[in-house]
Image 1 (cartoon, rainbow, N blue to C red):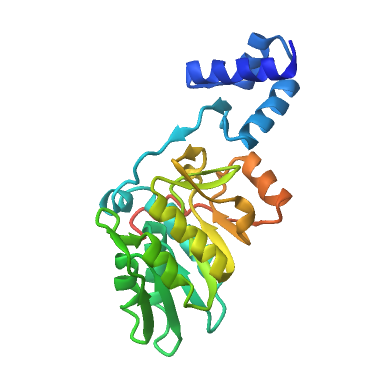
Image 2: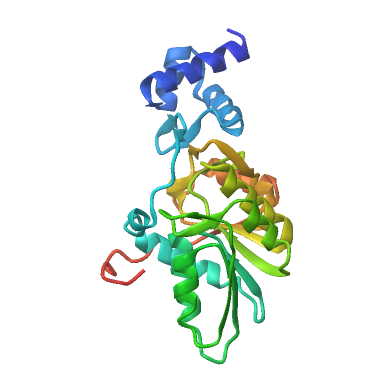
Length: 267
C-alpha cells in the first residue's frame, strides 16, 4: 500500500470511529506503530487529525463560541493558573492588550489587584475585562469599538481591527477557542481580522489558552502558531503541539494545574 493511500485509509478509519489507538490502526493497516505515528504526525500538521491521550481523533468542529456566562463555569481553576503564569510576562510600563474571554478575565482580576501606585494600562475588546481592570484605582482602559458580540460581551470586526493600529502595544495576550498545529481558527470573520490586527501591531504576542482548546477547528483561519512569541497553557497540551512550538521558535510556558485541595479558590 502506497503512503498516500495508507494515510487516506487511516483518516477514514478515525473519522468512522471518532478515535482510535495507534496499536489498533497499525493492526488494521498492517504496518508498524512507528509508521502510524509518522503518518499521524504528518496528518496532524495538515489539520486532518489530532493526537489525544491513548491515540488519535478527528478534529472537533466549533461553529459558534460558547457564551460568556457558559465559559465562566468551564475549567476556572486551570484558567486562573494560566492567568497567573501569563501575568509574570508583564514588564513595568507595558501597554497591554487583553483579548476577549474568561481566561483574560482572570488575568484582568490579577491586574486590578496590583498596588494602587502601579501603572495598569490596557487595551481590550472585552467589556467584562474592561470592567474588571477598572477596579484598579489608577487603571487606564481603552475599549475598542466595532460590532458587539452580545453573547461574549466583546467587540469585533473592521472597526475594532482598525482602532488597534492607533496603539503602540507592548504585549498582547490573545485568546483562543480552537487551535491546532496550523494555528488559531475562529467562527466568524470579524473575530479573525481583530486577531490578525493585534498580531500585526503588538511588539510581543502571547497565546493564552488551556489545553482543551487544542484539536478544535473553526471556519476562519486567524493566525499561525509562528505568529506568537510564546504560548501559556497547562501541562495536558499534547506532545505534538510542544514539538511544533519548538520547531517554529515559540516559547512554551506550561503552568502546573492548581492543587485540587484548593477547590474553593476564586478564579
